[in-house]
Length: 94
Picture 1 (tube, one colour):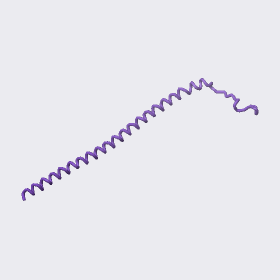
Picture 2 (picture 1 turned 180 degrees about the vertical axis):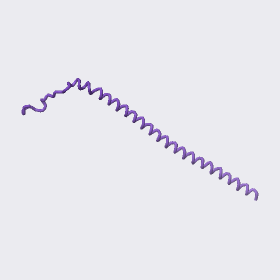
Picture 3 (picture 1 turned 45 degrees about the vertical axis):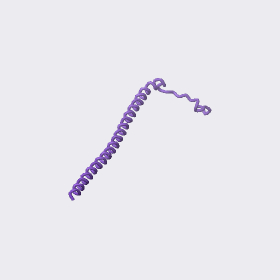
Picture 4 (picture 1 turned 90 degrees about the vertical axis):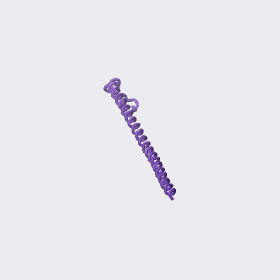
């Protein structure tokens, strides 16, 4: 190379030629990209399932708390009614 030549004017020799190099590399690249897309799809599916299960767990806890509160109120109401009946019966006997 002459000192007056710039790096922009250099020609590179590819071995093998660019067409056969591309023919050898391109199928592997496509295969890797398809595999990556499949892995991302599987990961997205797992994430969606985890989110759905988390939501179902939260809803079940809220439902359990609401039903427990309702059951306690009904039980307390029946106890109060029973006490009122006992007190009323005792008052009637006096």
